[in-house]
Length: 444
Image (tube, rainbow, N blue to C red; front, top):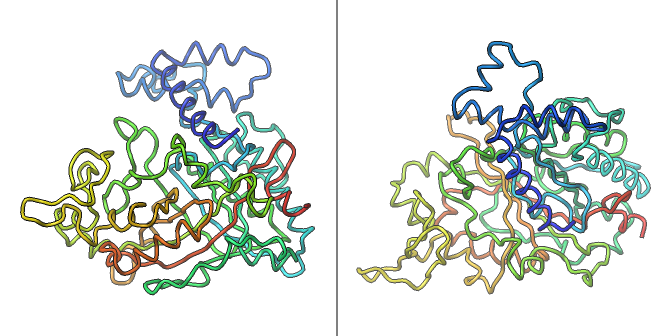
C-alpha cells in the first residue's frame, strides 16, 4: 500500500466510524460480538463512536452507563479503531496525517554490536511494530510487550525507522552510505546540543492515544536491550482528532495556523519531491525518504509581547484564519508581489512565508510533519516549548538545506526561534510481508 493509500484509508476509517456512531453502537457491537474470530480489540475499536456521540447529542449512552443498565461495555470511538498498515511501498508515518501524540527517539549501537546484531534488532523492531499497528493484535504478545495498550485499538499508530550517518561506520556499511546523507551544514543561528542531536538509529512514533504511543516506545526500547541504547528522546503532541468543528490545519504554540502550503499526496509531483525513486541511488533507498529532525524552541514570552498585527506581519498570514496578508482565504495562493495602498509590500520582505516559499527557493519543497512540545519552565519562568520539526524530502540537499540557508537570520520569525537539536536520517522504503525495514541494506 502506498503512502497515499494509507492516508486515504485512515480518512475512510474515521468517516466510517463517525457514520456508525450517529446511528447507534449497540446493534453493531452485538453483531460484531456474535461473529466468530472477532477479537476483543477489534470489537472495542470498531463499534463505539455512538458512545461519544450520545453524550454530545443528548446523553442517552452516557445515562445508560451512569445507571448501570447497559450489559455490554461501551466500545471505543473511531479514534481507537483507526488503523494504518505497517507494510507498504513506503514506511507509514511519512505521508499520513500527524497524530495527536508523538515520540522521537534516537539510539546508538552498543560497543560490539555489528551488522548482524543490527539486522536482528531491525527484525525485532519491525515485527513488534507490525503487531502493535495491526487491526487485530496477536493474542500472545512478545516477551518484551508490557501490555499497557491491551484495552485500546491501534489509534492510528505508526512506527517509522531511519539510519543516521554514524550507523554505516558502526556496521561496516560505508560503501552503501547515501550521498544525500551528508552532514547538514552549520547554520550561523544554530545553538545545537550535540547530546540531543544525530544518532545511529532513529524512530518516529505517532498515535492518537497517549498510552498507545508510550506503549510502542517502551516496547521498542526493551526490544533494543543488549544491542542499542537510547541517545535522546523527545515527546510531542498535536490537536486531538475531533477537537474542532471540522478538519482544520493545525496551529503551533505561537497560535499560528501552520502547514497550509505543505505538499499534499494528491499533488502530481508529491512522490518526486518526497520519496527516493525506484531508480535512485542507492537502490536500498528506493521508496524511502530523508528526515530532517530539529528541536526548535519558541521564545513564547517574547513573541506574546507583540501585537497580533505585528505577529501577522512577521509570519505573513492572518492569525485568525491563516489567510495570506496579500488577500483571500487560508488556501489562496500567496501573492508575493502584492502592493498595499501605501506602496508597502503586502507580504513583508522578511515575512516567514515569503522566505520559505518554493518560489523563493528555486522550487525547493519538503513535507513538514511536526509535533509541538512543552518540557516545563526554566528558572526564569519562561516555557521550554516549541516545535519538534520533522521535514521529509527525496534529497535534503535540495530540500531542507537551501530553504534553511535562506531562513537563517533573514527570516523575521527567526528572532523568536532557537534551533537546539538537529539530525538527518535515511528512512528506507517500507517492508513487505515477512520482511523487516532496512533488510535490503543489511542483507544486500
